[in-house]
Image (cartoon, rainbow over all chains, first blue to last red; front, side):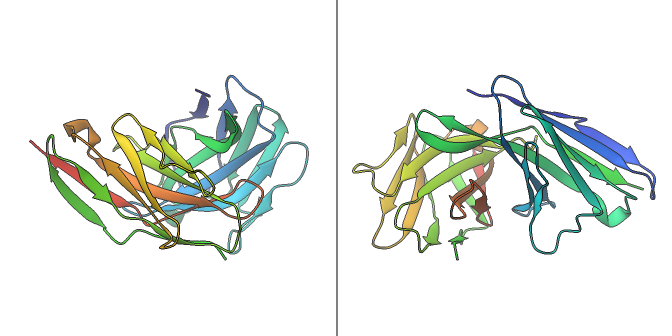
Amino acid sequence: GAVVSQHPSRVICKSGTSVKIECRSLDFQATTMFWYRQFPKQSLMLMATSNEGSKATYEQGVEKDKFLINHASLTLSTLTVTSAHPEDSSFYICSARGFAGLTDTQYFGPGTRLTVL
Amino acid sequence: AQKITQTQPGMFVQEKEAVTLDCTYDTSDPSYGLFWYKQPSSGEMIFLIYQGSYDQQNATEGRYSLNFQKARKSANLVISASQLGDSAMYFCAIPKHQGGKLIFGQGTELSVKP
């Protein structure tokens, strides 16, 4: 199956700093990637849709200036949490849109656990 | 608008027994699909099974099968012969119209007892 990687897997930073998370599709080209956020014991909440070569589309309530998304190539999307605060501590998961046979599906990365002190 | 509901926050099952995880949905799309994912404590999302709304038969993948009842708008996941490694969160998901976005249910935490 398709493989999606995320880096880093875990990051701890001080309040006020910016953190960049990378999402890579390793064995296929993904024109569309998605970024999700998940709090403990809760479901995944879609933050934004990242399209290669164009601006990301953010879900309602997500601050685009705080969560900067760049999809510079067909295999890489980055999420930058700017001026991170403790409330931004969460599990961030990316996915890449692809096809399993004829099924339009998403392949998920392993996630990045962000802790802001 | 699409909506997906999992009403069981937590479930327990004895090892080697079967368990059914509930999922109901609401959609206005004439054609749609339903996904089930497993999320172990490590956090990765593992794709389990997919059901297309026009598929004639219920989907099966190894020990996983879908009890798809279109009229009731339910797509319950059945895990047969539960194993200790099945202990995880399970999410049902439906695409949000076009564009590939997925809307996830609240999740069910399954615990398999030895």
